Image 1 (spheres, helix red, strand yellow):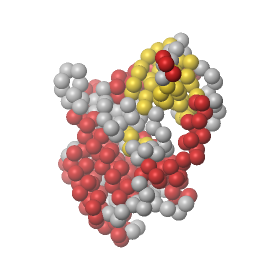
Image 2: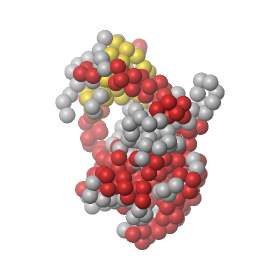
Image 3: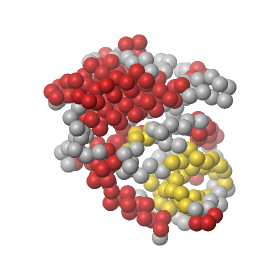
Image 4: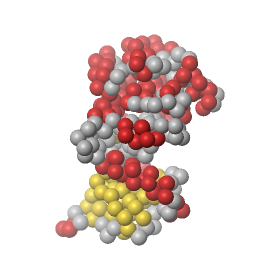
Length: 318
């Protein structure tokens, strides 16, 4: 991936290296420089120059920054700063020194390994807690924001060398008020991880996110999507009408998790856990039944990605 040009953003963020890019935005590892040698690593997100004047793209970026700035939870990557310079809008976010869950699962698969069940349950429980918080956090008017992430997937869960679990990318998230205003609009999120109601374009709430988390948990436990089919359309159809392939079908020792996953993956939202708190408690209750992990999460991340992450961070000292 090409390195970022030497550049100072808003007089205080020194870009070090581009670490991700998508259709609308790019993210840089950056150093926030301050008085008396103060330095802080941040992830700086900005709109790609080619779409920086597109009204819808800019509004999408502004909505994400405004929504995420209100969320303060240990399992949600924080937004520290938001501003505008001559290149356009930017957001300075918490830098998570680690990979996405998708990258970690890929790396483990390359080694013919799977994530330890204890770690998978811990990670899913922490994401459920973050979803509970996002659903209940109060907005400026004092009312619950009722935020629905709408894109829970392995690509949007990060794990760090410190053992932290962070939910990222609220770019398609909506509050209850925004959801009400956009019913009937285009479907947002990754098709393979959508709940039946989201894939059908029906109204959704936090229970939709919990369905998606159930899909992710299955993949963390077995490396297999519970509705795996030949293409995305078939996956979406299976999620709506067919039973999931549970972990015990692949590994009988995981049967103790099946009942919780059946509840998370229920077709009818009324049959699922009704909020993140319920899911968190259920997953935590299963934790003592799981064999102890040979490595803590942070140690596993370091073993799999330590050299790459150290090389990336060392660039800020050059």
